[in-house]
Amino acid sequence: MISVIIPHLNQPEMLRRCLSSLANGADPRLSVEIIVVDNGSKQMPVEVCSAFRNVRLLSQPVPGPGPARNLGVANATGDTLAFIDADCVAGGGWLNQIEHEFSLDADKSILGGDVRIGCENPDRPTLLEAYESVFAYRMKEYIAKQGFTGTGNLAVRAKVFAAVGEFGGIDIAEDRDWGQRALKSGYQTHYCENMIAYHPARKSFSELALKWQRHTAHDLARVKGRRGWRLLWIARAAALTLSPVAEVRRICVSERLNSWRARGLAFVGLVLIRSYRAAIMLSLACGATDATTLSGRWNPQSMTGTSSRKA
Image: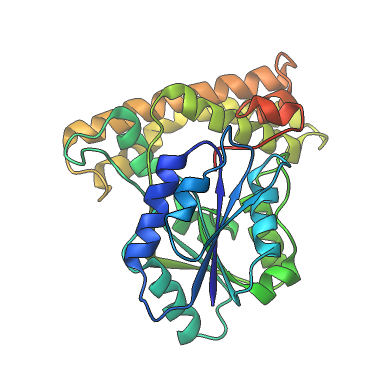
């Protein structure tokens, strides 16, 4: 059996789309259970979940995607655990592909799939859609270079998850932390290009800014305290402002953009985002911004310990 675990926060219509994609894309012969874990929504998505078969709804008051997924795992009965986010749409055959890969090779224990941007109008992507189509969710690269994949499109054998341990809390990048712990324990993540999930691009620059605030705070926590960390951090920030030039070729050859207009938008978005990231890094290095505050800004409730996240 495959247990699909979906953390959710205040996205009932997106959750409905996600559940529809799972229901429409699965082989009816597959044994599947779906566990939605609400992480502090203003209103529990009871109506949405009750409209689909084999869906259970749980509540996790502890803020963060890690705790939400951990509760789902604790209540799962399948020998395979599959993770997808509430705002994602599973590509055709997503569950079938997971079943196929694990059945084909008993040595495979962790799968990371391809995450693509679901553009509202693929022929005329917005600036953020164009930017994220190239630079967001580069799972193949993350797996090859850093040994982890995103938890928004992840499958793992239940016994391997038990051996590696639970996801971390809100104070760390739980996907990277878990994947790298798995690698240290001898479990390799395998990239599966046909295991596809579609994620919407952020609607505004402020949404993307919140993401980078959190990620930058996590990165600082990993290096702070090391000898000479401040100078290295500042140098890294400076390099970040110049880095868009090195990415021109990636933008020009990307198969995920279909026009020069889209490529131009992607470059503009890249310059804006990396300049913003560099500014955050310098602010943290100078003590003008607090890392704990940044990591919690994506959900003010997390600062008071009451509720959760954008899954």
